Length: 275
Image (cartoon, rainbow, N blue to C red; front, side, top):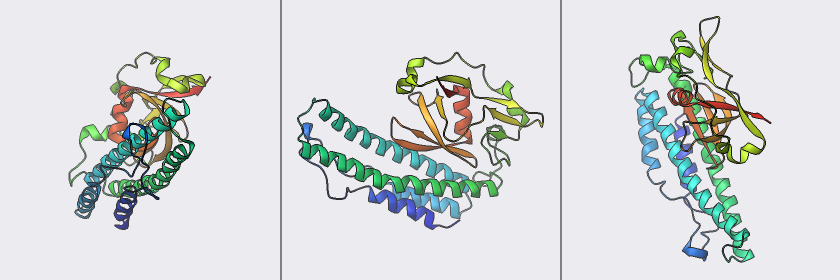
């Protein structure tokens, strides 16, 4: 794996520290719109992740990078929420903001989207490469054999599809009885056009391999009861040993590995269907 993938993430993240054209000041409540804060530790974390990979600990490196991606998505999500709130308040007349200043805020929002886009892409590239490295190592973690619990999680074994597991003991019997359909109000804005469909579960096929049914597919909307807070996400990509989801509430992407997907399945995942 090319080590430049680590430096690409670092470079992209550091660029989000400053907005092109400078910060937006003079806003109600003393708010200042500037670059992302709290990203200084990413360089050292990436260095540790690269060190772990070079030492043959690809699984540990992958876990560290996934956590970093989630942390960054949280930081950018809070920034987007703050800026979006200012724009919404101005449009609703709740705050006194000149048209010129409102345009400055909108421009800052667009500039940040241009900066965070490359971060999301470089994270996906790095995680995909680490996923592949882990698979080639036989899914070893820190030089040890994968535990029995991990072996039973969705997408473990030699499968390239997170919808499949090679361990027949991961059949439906290992999944708790599905709870009642969640409150439709939890669908929020999606409730107008979508309704709860089937609950995802693990079933054993004729080949004695356990698979997630209905199959997780890119482009579909799902309600995940196990995320905080529970809500609707869209699956952007089904990768080897993981899936990439997009949470519109935080305007952020996140990767979900096999262990986390297993936990979310137990908590409850429902496919959304058009009304």
